[in-house]
Length: 507
Picture 1 (cartoon, rainbow, N blue to C red):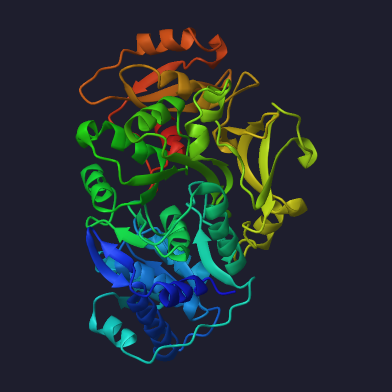
Picture 2 (picture 1 turned 60 degrees about the vertical axis):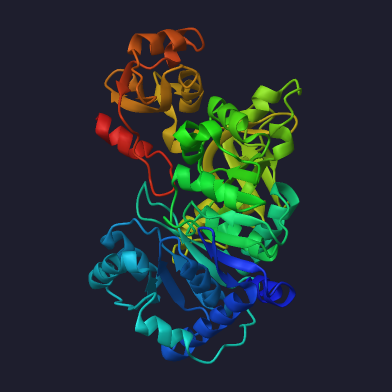
């Protein structure tokens, strides 16, 4: 089944319901959105000579037209290639060429970057800028009937961040996206007409994945006027939209808790705040629960199994009387319903409870493979399991606690040190806002532990107090040898801390 069926269904059953809004203003109903999508699908196929399976790149910041463009691709049987809008032109050019994009659709604020990327590319795809006469002509043609996609046709070519080399294109099929969408209702939340999702996080990533569940539930997709994340705007949108939900990286949730508006914020309309994409430290989670109430849900996923590996639902965030509440709050929950999750050691053999190994996943949400990369596909999907590259341990109840990415593990004197354990301790310091722990090369020990610390606004942090805190909670060999105080941590477009850059800066 074509994932675009979700929109066709909503347009029939809830034609007059708000489908897309900008700020507090409705833009299109489901009936109008479906008509616009069918028209653009026809324009793409006829005016640009595209055939089912062709790739269309989307260099777009969050905007109503993004919803139209991605659904039009699927409606027409094309493969959407959403691109991180903040990438450099040469990085975009690589994705265009590697993905074999026939067409690039760009929002006006990315038109210059699109032109530079096409100039640097070998394939030189055509470019359509939304809001122009060319775009209007595409929308003015005859509507196209939905393409009868096969379940294993590629719907979304998701390019990884590429922080450790060239990005790889994860092939996400219609089956993958439908399984991901259905599992939202099973494990994360219910969605009904009249609800809304606030797209403050990039729609080319996790927030765009959750757009599908909200179209399936016939809810409103609300794009902030700013097109991104602004704490004051987010609190205003929560007030404006009953039944509001949103997805955010933990760093953005952290910013919300520290915003001046948080003190007297009215969050009664907030239904669910789903966080994921990086570690949510226990102290940060408690602050968010104090602000929003028991409305937090955590998911752990990867582009290769989008939004769907484990879940820590709202009810467990609220279960403060459980004897292992603190441990569970520090975990990423248990396996979501449509996947199997295993922690494996040597030879991909399952480890007993408490054993630390690589997290492996299999199920209908796991990608078909990497585009034009059979070697990486074979390595990552060997034995029928997705090898995530994440290190974790699972308890006897099936709750998974992530230790770190395998590349972030610090080995000092032959001993494994997991940065997150140290970060959790440092974040209990009353003057610390953020922290990242990394390894720095050492001639004798291989690596030494370095903590990069961001103080709270208006506060100062004494390294001696940080060291005393670590000394009171963790073994001496794990304690940082150096504390570096900075104003901010480097992050990517999705709010993830760039530890690769931190390590490079320390050498």
